[in-house]
Length: 347
Ligand SMILES: [Ca+2]
Image 1 (cartoon, rainbow, N blue to C red):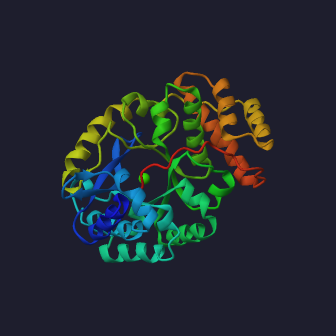
Image 2: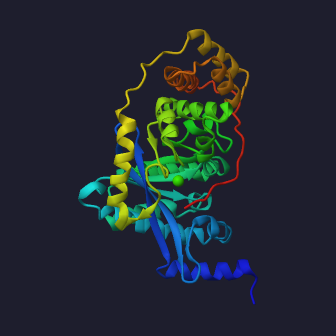
Image 3: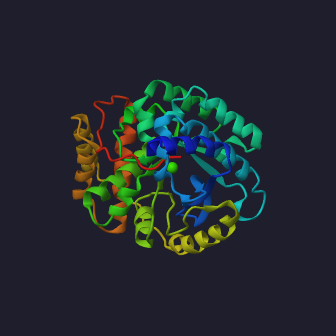
């Protein structure tokens, strides 16, 4: 008998051809407007014996063997086709986000595959968001960069997933057509428990705004997390507080639940914006000039920022303002290392 991983590999090759690959959709909520703006397509394997499997149980092998490429193309085509068929009701006009793994982004046919999925489905390019990991952006900078620019030229938007888990820098981010940064769920879960993680969340919001992108929080489970994210300036969120990933047929009900959960959050007025103190701004710029990490800068902001809601807004705005200055002057200095955490589930 074949070893377990080879059996899994052989089974996966057949699965891509059969109808066992299932796409579920998790709504993405606008925290300020209390509306649903899109859905993220997430792959599942309807295993004939083991039931519905999440990506963590089969994607690592698919990534190693290269099967992730045909698997990912299938998810892409299915998600585009389903999104294009949402003509009325609460699903109308929603963005659809599709994850591309490192291997897919580096594949020479990635742009053609996306173009064909759009053409076959009739989905307008502006409704498709391609999620790539920070590591996909960082590890294969040459070909990934040209592929992402070609995708952006099609009209597709790019989001950087699991942000804060890799080694990102302003230099790299400013080279890509990034429309959104997605705060990794590990930071969202640690909010309120660790001031370092709180500071990282504020810094990612600030970094997103500095490069003209929106900020999306993943894995939001409580109203406290959603409120804290909104006060920090994070615009979008997804997670079980609003809805888990559901089959396309269940989306209308999931969207209703999201609207019910988001309405009270959006109804709360935001504290007035407070501009950062120029002395603190100058200090942060000086820290950046010496190559201080985003962590160090965030920790300094954390120490000087007030704890009330206006302080949270101030916190993110201060980072955005300082980092926007740095991007504009292009005197970029050393990369800003962030801690590396294990790659999350993909596709
Ligand atoms: Ca994603």
